[in-house]
Structures are given as C-alpha cells and as structure tokens.
Amino acid sequence: MKRTATRYPILVLAAALVTAAVCLALPGRAAADAFVSAIDDLPLMAGLSEAPERTLTFESPDGRIVEAHATGRLSRRSVIDFYAATLPQLGWRQVAETFFRREGETLLIEVTAVGGGLDVQFSLKPAARK
Image (cartoon, rainbow, N blue to C red; front, side):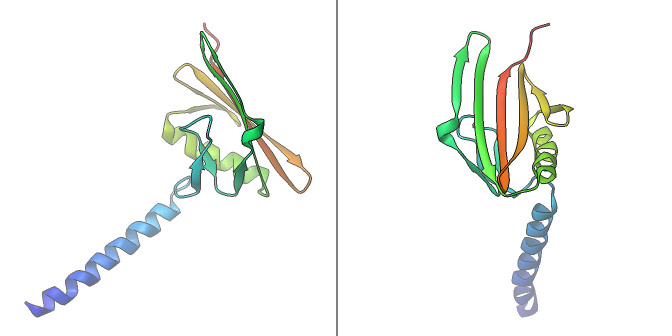
C-alpha cells in the first residue's frame, strides 16, 4: 500500500507536465495573453500591445463597426499565422489571408511595417447582405 501512495503523486505530476506540454504545442493556444478590448472575443497575440487611443467603435442598425490597433516587434508572417490558426477555433471562417467571416460579421486584419515594428489594424464590420 505504501508503494501505491508514493507512486500516485508521481503520476499526477507526470500527467500535469504532459498536459502543459500539449497545450503549449497547440497553435494559437497559450500564445494570446489578452483580448482586444473593443472586440471582446478577438485574442491579442502575445507580443502585441493594444493602442486603445486609436480605437473607433460605432453601432449601426446592421451591427457593430470597430477599428482597433495594436503594435509590436513581431514578423508579419507570425501575426498572420497566429490569427489564421486561432480565429477558426473561435468560429471565424478564413476567406482570404487576412479576411475572416463569422455570423454576419467580417474581420479584416491589416499588418503594416512601421519603423522597426508592426501596426496591426483590426477592422470589424457587418457582412454585406446578399
């Protein structure tokens, strides 16, 4: 009985370590530390800092219109890859490299080189009616 009691904590520790390793290995997981404040279900990639003073929001009869910005010293490819991997997990369908659609809304992510870093603009608006 004593041998089982000493093995149990080791098994729990091993399971915790395996779970943590799997979570860290999943693309888009554990890489976002926060969410864009004006788009509460849009993750903010780690390494990006939101620029809330540049955020514009508007409620229209057709839905919300939001323009939010973040900056950081990341590669353009890493930002695009992060959102391509993460947004489908949140119900967004990728239509083009930086254009997504979900439940009557569209999201365009524009990544621009500025100085030694990037400016990332998130533009959310109602999808065009058919």
